[in-house]
Length: 294
Image 1 (cartoon, rainbow, N blue to C red):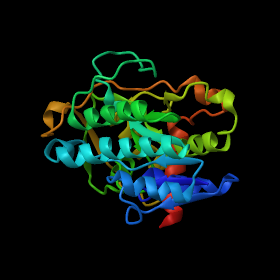
Image 2 (tube, rainbow, N blue to C red):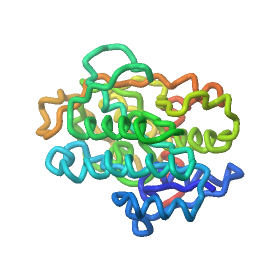
Image 3 (cartoon, helix red, strand yellow):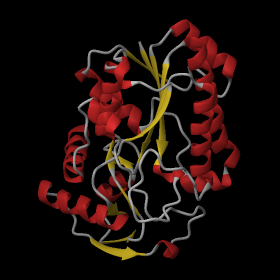
Image 4 (cartoon, rainbow, N blue to C red):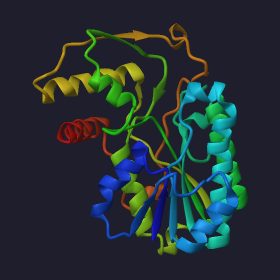
């Protein structure tokens, strides 16, 4: 059995969508069913469930909100990760944990690999880094997957905000660069890991950290333009929108943002025969799925 914790976010919803393509028994655990901030509750829950794999999709992801709600961010991004890691060791399951490109400071101009050392700029990135460290300390079999600029047709994210906008003009940051990652692609990558979890050659280390992200480096401005361009081609109800590039310092944001955090997808995934689609394919998939769900 595979358990998914944090079952209401966009990645969990993408996992639900892609799961029927795999021959896997998956249970999505709502937050009301288990308090992941209490170790005894977590451990007792998974002792009874006896999962083979637990996928942790729970996280405090509001980057600016983390600056003013530091305790909440730390509880969900560090303590919950620690509890799951400790339980994974006691109950002998593989823990798959999702992390972020924001563990890096973005002060260089080359793509980050999974061997680069974290050095976050903001509290959100710091708590995600500490969550990684806690897992590496307490777990005996874990895979931390760092991803970048996750988007999908689900929930509130950059793609949905731009796609839904009916404004005649948008102002979008043009000095932050990342590698947009379609949540459906990441979901397939995670489910492929679960499907191959018995193949020991893929998991030669007890705890590993890998990267999975889109293969295109873009600024938020370039990403927004591409979303609107694709939307114009695909849909008849497109509203013409002017997109103006701006600098980060033009925004009143509580948290510092790293300027350059594209991630290089790890060879680990190539061994599983997995590689992300390009950003145009991801946007097309998100638009098609969004329209179908309306």
